[in-house]
Length: 299
Length: 260
Image 1 (cartoon, one colour):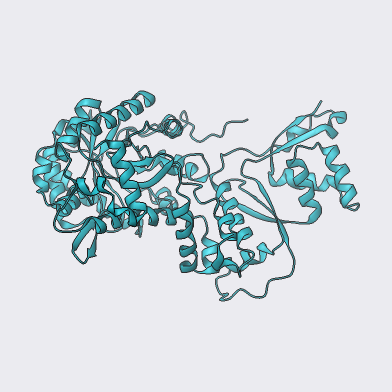
Image 2 (spheres, helix red, strand yellow):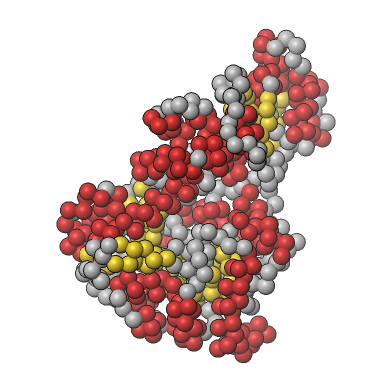
């Protein structure tokens, strides 16, 4: 069969790592707009699962990739399951890595596969030695298969456990040390959990080792009311809240000009609103690290 | 508590709220802020069910217009809780919905719904089908005349044929029209359709009976000669040559071989 020219890498030098730290998630609704308007953003991120198998989505991604550096942020590896990562999932993921040459590859500290069922949510883990071992085994399996380092993201959780043997920030540091991966710090998730479980989110940030943090995420969340209280749910369907921006600024000071993503997956607004949120993130980075970013760009 | 035991207990508690007397999860649960385990698990249950409904409904925009969002959501809710996906790739999750809806009691008064949702799923599958290029008709120029009858054509990967006893094409027209409020009386006829993706967009084409048989026979692996023989038995007036030319122009085929 004739190969389809997804990307002619000789014809188009692909943009490599971002010089501008703030990026946005690329969603199908914005395919045409982003190709036409070419907004001033540092990079784009997609869920690789949406591009498995081929088809029209990949064609749009190929066009967008010619304009921006790309990060592949997975939701389906289920790194925290008490079973090995699905071989076929890794194969399809690797195919995308080979085609689209992302500057980052990531997934979550959570689980969704149980037996033959995929539960399609980022489910919580008890933070124990056994979980640490299982998770690191899976991360190492993925890193060996991909031949590169990945990042793992801290989750939003709505339930916590008395069986925990360490705090989540300690767990995140231990994963990075043990599996040799990096950390993708979701600032909104830390805030959501601080309210849901009652801890100080600044204390959490101050205890994450800066050398592991290579990306940050920002998103909006929603309150869900129950008769016995309110739970914050990580819904990705509205602008980033002021409390989360404040926490992010603290993160920018501590972790440097790490690539930062605005995630927006539900009730998706006009592209311009998403870009405005990314500009706001960039303004915090410029405020604290302008000289660093320029020095990096000049190298 | 072993991780396997925890995950098994969590799964059952989330999917079957009655399972909450399960001690494994309850014993491990930390009572933060007074919000009970039941309410916390509702957030997860809602996330999982809602995301699966959304994933499966995304393939059925016309069906949603036809039967209304509420009706389709209810049917889909019943579908997803009994048909959890087996993998993390959800692009084609929900393809079994047409068979489900046929047996779904509240949809019994909509006999065409099984075929219509199948049509939308073929549409979605064409969208996600691997890219390929159409066969360039010029490639046939060098075929020796005696080899012509032995040609076998392969279809584009996105191509599917659908034969329904309901006028699905009329329903598509209704769903695409902006001003129509109610589905008019449907014609008392079936339809034959071809769904494929020539490039970026999926296309739907109505086929007459002879054209459908021509394509279905080629899809079945028959040569041009065999196809002509079958066609003439059923439709003595049908002419294979213009049909072949038409589909070479449309980009229906991706390759050919000569059966020796």
